[in-house]
Length: 272
Length: 368
Ligand SMILES: Nc1ncnc2c1ncn2[C@@H]1O[C@H](COP(=O)(O)OP(=O)(O)OP(=O)(O)O)[C@@H](O)[C@H]1O
Ligand SMILES: [Mg+2]
Image (cartoon, rainbow over all chains, first blue to last red):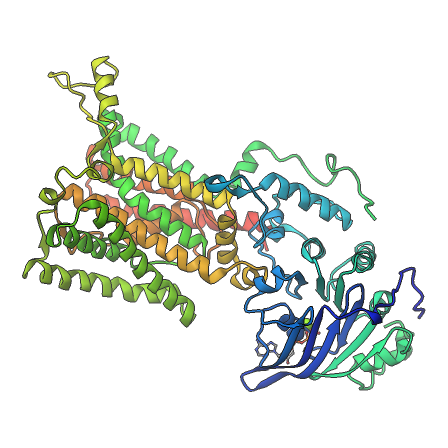
C-alpha cells in the first residue's frame, strides 16, 4: 500500500485552531459514549477521526455540530467558549456537517433538501420569498462539480441512488461550510470516480483555509488527504499523530482498536 | 473535476409526458375528485345546483370547513394532527361571544383578542406535544374533550345556565368591522350585474344572489396564501422538512419546534376565524358549534393529498377536498337520494383518497 498522493499538504501546525474540543464527555443515560475526548481542527488542515464501529466518532462530531450537548467539557470556537444550543447555531458559526445518516428528506426535492434551513431569499418585506430559480441553478451546478449529473433539481431525494444521495449531502456541506467542514463517512456509498472527487474536494476546500474533519474506515482514503489522525477507541482517544509520523500499518492496527485483525489477511492478500 | 456531459441530453432520462408529470402533484386526486363529483351531480341532481345561487349554497359550508382544512393540511404536512379544532371553534366562539356580549367590546378589540386567545391555546397544545414527545394525536384528543367541556361550562357561566349565548347580532350591529367577517361581500358588483341582466334576478330587479358570502372570500385568500407560503417561502420548506423527518430537518438547521408550535397556533386561529364568522352569522353561539369538524377537516386534507405520515401534501388539495365535501353534503339535497348516503359517500371518498395517496407517495419516493 502506498501513501503517496497527488494532494498538497500544508503546514497547518502553526495556525490557531478554529474549533477546540476539550475533554468532551457524552453520556446517554447510563451509556458513556465519550469519556473525555480532546480534539482540535485548524484552518487549512484535514484532521481525520478514525476508529472502530461504536467508538464514538459520530457522537463526537455531533457535539461539535450542535446536535448533542456535551455532558462535560468545553468547546472553544475561534478561541472563545462556545455553546451551540442547536445545529442551526453551529451552522451560523460556519460549521457544516455531512451526517452519517445524511439528514436528507426523501419526499422533498434535491433543491429543497440542499437549501433546507438556509433558503436563498429574494424580494423585500412581504414579498420576501424562496428564490427557487437560483436554488435550482446552484444545486445543479454544485452536483455537477461533484461529478453527478442530476436529472432535474425537482427530483425527490427518495428516488436517488444511495451514492447520489450521499453526494447531495456532501455538496450541500461543502457549499455552506464557511469555516469547518465535517464529513462522517462521506464516501461509504460512493463509486470510484465520485470518491476521488470527494477527496479532491477535501483538498480544494482545505487550500481555501477551511478546517476539515474527516471520518473514514478506509485507511487509504484517510492517508490520501489527512494531515493529522486521531484514533478513537471505546469513547477515548488513543492519541493524535501527524502525517509522516505514523505508518499505514500502525494506523490500521490502531483503527481496529488495537485488537488482532481477523485471520483473513492471507487470503485477502493484505488488500483490506 | 467537472467531467460532465451537458445536462440537456441525458440519455437515461425519458421525456416525461405531461400527464405523468401531473400525476406526481399532491392535489391531483382532489381535482380529479371534484371533476367526478361535478359529473355525478350534473347527472343526478336538479339543474339548479350549479346555478349561481346553488354554487353559493354549497360553497358556504365548503368554505367554513375549508378554512379549517387548510390549517389542518399545513399542520399535517408539518407532521402533526390537531383533533381539537372542532372544539376550538366552540371555545373560540364562546370567548368571542363573551367579548362582544358580556364585555361589550367593539370588534376591533374582540377579534384580535379572540385570535390571541386561540393562538395561546394552540401554542399550549403544541408545547405539550413537543415537550412530551407524545403523538399529537393523543394530546389533541385530550383537548378535544377539554375544550368542548370548557365551552359548555363557560357558556353556562356566561349566560347563567343556558348552553346558548344570544345577542351577538345586536352587539355587533353597525360595527365597521362587521362586513369583513359577516354577510355578503361585493354586493355593489352583484347589484350592477343584476341591473345589466348578467345574473338571475327576482321580479323586483334585485339579484337572487346578493353577494359572495365573506367566508368564501376568506377561504380563497387563505388557500392562496397557504399555497404561496408552502411553495415559495423558506417557512414552507421548513414545514415540509419538519414533517418529512424531524431529526434530519433539525440537523440541517430547521427550527423544527418553532415550526410545529406555529402550525398549532395557526390551526387554532383558523378555528377562531370560523368561529367568528359563524357566530356573527348565526347571531349566537352554542356548545355544539364545530362538532366533529376536526374529522371533516382532516378528511378534506387527506382527500387533498396530505399524507397521514407528514411531509407531503398541498393547501390547494385541501381547498378542493373541502369543495368536494360541500358539494356532497349539499348536493344530495338536490337529488332523489336519501341524505343519509352522505356518510357512506364520505367514508368511500376517504378510503379511495388514502389508497390513491399511498400509490402517489410510492411513485414520488421511487417505490422504496
Ligand atoms: N442517542 C443515543 N442513545 C444511546 N446510545 C447512543 C446514542 N448514540 C450513540 N450511542 C452509543 O454510543 C456509542 C458510540 O456511537 P457512535 O455512533 O458515535 O459510533 P461511531 O464511532 O460513529 O460508529 P460507526 O463507525 O459504526 O459509525 C455506541 O455504543 C452507541 O450505541
Ligand atoms: Mg458513526
